[in-house]
Amino acid sequence: MPTRIEAIVIFSYWLIIAILCCVNYDLFAGNLNIPKTNAQLCRYIAGRTGVLSFANLPLAWMFAGRNNIFLWATGWSFRMFNIFHRQAALAATLLAIAHSIAFTIFFFLIGSGIYIKRFTEKWFCMGVVGTVVMSFLVIFSCLWLRRKTYELFLLIHIALSTVTIISMFYHVSVYGGEYDPYLWPLVAIWGFERTLRIIRIIYCNLRVRFAGGGLQHTSSVAYYDEVSDIIRLEVTPAATGISQKPGRYYFLYQPFRWTGYESHPFTLGAWAETSKVAIEKLSETGSSSPVENSKSDEMQQVANVSKDQNPEGSPSNETTYVFWIRPYNGWTRQLRDQCLKSSGTAISTTLLLEGPYGDSAPLWAYESVLFIVGGTGIAAAVPYIQDHIRRTSATGTGTCTKDMTLVWSARQASYVHNVASRELQPALERGDFSASFYLTNGDKSAASAVPSLACTNTTSSLDTNVLDELTKDSRLKSLTAIPKYEVKYGRPDTKSIILERAKSANAANSRLAVLVCGPDSLADEAREAIHKAMLQGYRQIRYIEDAYSW
Image (cartoon, rainbow, N blue to C red; front, side, top):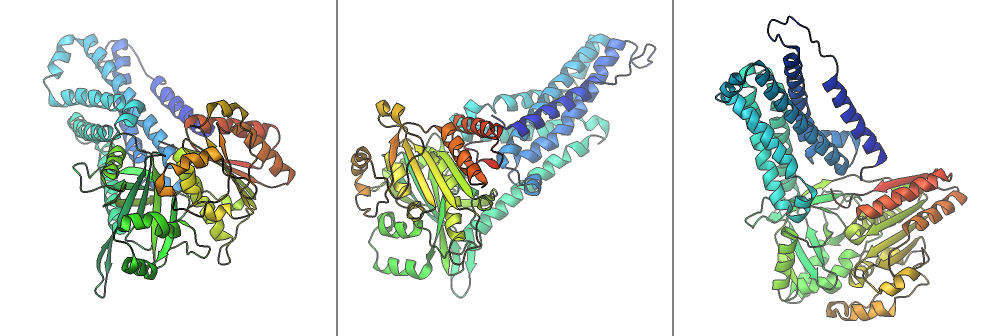
């Protein structure tokens, strides 16, 4: 669901459109061009809705792009602009339908023969085509199709959008270019957006190294864990000047496929810098299987966050990006199948990065931070935890945060263990960080007895049932340094957790930031709890929602 401010903006937007469509029609008897007043009304409605439909098209095109100048200017999320894009596109389509209906009624009021005659003219037929195509654009943008087969949705969307632009140019050609200023921005926006995508791809994935270095390109390794049903994707971009910050996401391409033009967005889950000298030594003395080697000791080093790492990157280091992907349909399922076909459920594959996109929330400005995440939503929390560790290091930039709490619900213990023993391990060893892990796919009989937030990294222990599950995965047996944490069965009581933390923060006169990333139901529950806490007088709370999907 949209947030309250988004709902207010959307409501106001539709209210303005409704008012503009309904007021100030000057109808009078004796009109020499259109004698009938009802025909006048239809003609004026048709003209006004047509112009308003055209006026919404640049908004729909602008808000759809990930290289959106308004996104840069406002710092708002892509998810928010995506909502506005859908509303602008829907408004343009409904106005186009109203335009077509009003003109149809108008022609029949002044004589049906004129309507049939108009169908022999190209501009009129292309107007019909444009309305029909825009209607299909809305129909084929339904949530079911986007989730079921995003690739097909994208192809249909691009193809029908192209037909819409072409048909609209033909439709208004009889007006001698009067309405072309509404259409040329669509071409410019699309061209600008696609050009910036290509520039980003080249910058991230290709680097010319002089003095015999040659051309360096992005390398990547994908691992699939059958127990947790998660793909761990580790990508080392060629570019070294990309700053690593929380809140970033990238679009991934797998170019050497029939559908290599497709791009898929994923949140940057973690990053780590590795010395090139160390990599060269590992390659000289490493095993015959670099993929398997990276799955143990080497990637354990890469995943752990160094306290003195440089956030802006360093020419002497390579940065490895970690993405966690749950395979569904389309490309993610194909990537999973590629991993399963390999002997060790891991492959070295060619991927291209496009980015970075997204912006960081200033969590460092709050004394207390609470993360509530579900499933792969952990990718939204880990970068902020890494950033907190960096800021509190000797070379860090400082932070106001005194305590961080992570509440993570996931289906499988294997997934929790993998992240806890790698990316979260440095945080679990700190006194200012606490965590609760909830298994939603565990013992259902114990779900009702799950306590609220009560675990810390210093006194908790790993559940024996979880250990039993973990030992089934032979690839995890080599991990000797298992951080201490507690795993609970069932779902967390989000409302109680937030209200408890709000009460504690209020008692300490500190500000609280709550970051949520998970299914819509989790976000709605968290928003309701934040609202309830503020009604109870806990005003120093900021709610930050990282969209689980768009």
